[in-house]
Each structure stands twice: as structure tokens, then as C-alpha cells.
Amino acid sequence: MTNGSSSWGIHAPSIVAMSTVGHAVEGRGRSLPARVNAALAFIRAIPVQAQASEYLAVGQGRRFRAAQRRRTRQTARVGFLVIGVAVAFDAFALLGLGDDTATVLILDSIVIGLSIAGWWLLPRSLRHHPELAAWVVVTGVILSTVMTGLTVPSLITQTNAYLILLPSLVALVLPWRTAVHIRWLL
Image (cartoon, rainbow, N blue to C red; front, top):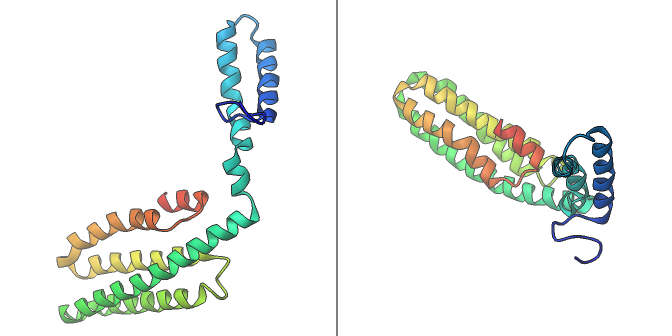
């Protein structure tokens, strides 16, 4: 135990909050055994401990958020280049498959344009919104993939594989904030 913290990582303010919660539990549940009261006090103190944790205190700082945005911006720029090349390859592969691929080729062109625009704008006007830019470009890729599967039935197996793989791959690669990460996975 050093500097007011225990081996559990509980800081002094949260120990005070735990004892306050413990007294409140004892007042309501006088008939409960002391062990149950202690367990209830421990459970009720978890939110206080989480709010007092060093991780959340650092995560709320402006410097931390700026560093996180910078990492997301750099990763998204590389991802946009990869997406642009992959979608260009997809469009090139679809050229010889018939006349019904015109819609998909138009969508692929839009996604290529979005990825190049996102790559160009991320260090400039979108520098504070890298997650939104990544979300738009990846959603465009998903729509293009769905349209490919609907338009060219012979590619439905590959389309399903991409749709299963793509959201989890993006969630693993991009260093999003936790809230955005959970929204993306949902």
C-alpha cells in the first residue's frame, strides 16, 4: 500500500465512498449478516472505483484524446489507401462480367472517390473527426459489397465472406475510442 492506495488499486476517495456505502447498507439491512453487507457494499462501490481509476482520469484528458485522434487519423489514412486500391481492383475484376455491373462500378467509383477524399481531408478539415470519416468510407465499402452480391450472383459467396469479415477487421485495425468502437460493432 503506497500513496493512499491499496493493492486492489482503490484510491483513498473510493475507500471513503465504500465506507459510506457500507454504512448505508448496514442501516437498511440490519438483519443481513455482516458478510452479505460487506459484499453489497463492495458491489455498490464498483462504480465509484471505476470513476476514480487512473485509466478513466487519463482518458478524459485533452492530451489523451488528441493523441488518440492522431493515431486514429494516421491509421484511417493508411486504411483509405488500402480501401481505394482494393475497390479499384474489385471494379477492374467486374469490368468483364457483363452489363448488369454498371451500378456496382458506379458505387465502386464513389467509394474510391470517398477514400481518396478522406485520405486528403483527414490531415486538413477532418482532422478532428477521423472516426466519422472512417465510418463513412467503410459504410460505402459495405454498400458496394452488398450491391456486388446482389448484382452478380456468382460472387455471392465471396460477398458474404467479405461482409462477415469486414466489420470485425475494421474494429481490430482502427484504434477507435471505446464508445465509437462499441457502436461500430453493434
